[in-house]
Length: 391
Image (cartoon, rainbow, N blue to C red; front, side, top):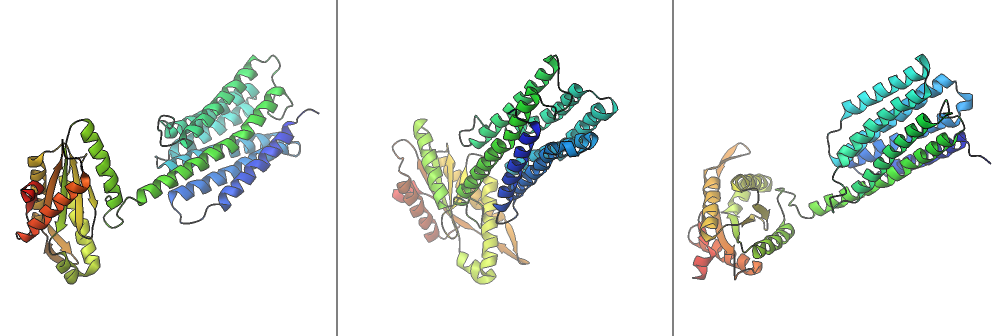
């Protein structure tokens, strides 16, 4: 029994609707951009289902309504997918571009469908609109197959590249055919094959979309586990990973890594005066001061209540002392406004340097820690080198 376009369209409609409902039902939690993207993708699947439903019921729908309504739903769904993917990836949404493609594509299809009927030109015009949306998706996903940290982007890239190949094949088959069909519902091998494969595309794209959503969530959880929630800098765990990485790189290139332990002086008095909320604001201001001094390759992290670790690759003993002095003097000059009151803060700093013959980070931390306490014993608001303490 020959396969009918209407039958395939009905199956495609049921599949797209089921996928959309599952995506919508599976979104729980806050209204962050990732979940908003999933819901937008689910709505796009519902609209795609409506478009396939119109094609399945084409025997009961006036041809002009089928032409105008079906293409409008299809182009609207494509534009929504463009926005959803970019929303998920945190890229510019390109809403104006997607809207312009939808409007121009729909107008061209209407012209070649009603005003100056020509099926092949109508398909070509609609294909250009599809290609525009696909290119917007590819632009958002570019680099996915080169980035070892994401495979979902690569999957989606291939889905959209294959979608473009399907569009090219359909147009080539129509223009090279001696007896092309006059509409998509006309029984023909070209139409059956196109409707079959285009109906599978939402399934593959949705799988890739969910894989991408999962990768982004895992990356966010990875980052959250390594960020201090108060100050926004790396936490103890992340600094341990960073120090291992820096030492490996320094050892490979026979370089060095400066280590600084920075501690806020008399911080208990700050908490007593301003409360813990005020103390939190002071720590945030302290981090901002430290970050204003650091280079792009330097890293600062919170490793204790008011204690911070700074790692600075490529500096020697004199360089790390100079960096510590710049941090100390910058903090000392900073006038903080906490709850309408003025506060001046000072810090004590201990330093150490990793280099040839000394690659043991725990030992370096102990040296910097000993130097930090030496600075506090000497009256605070000072920078002391671990080598001086060891001597």
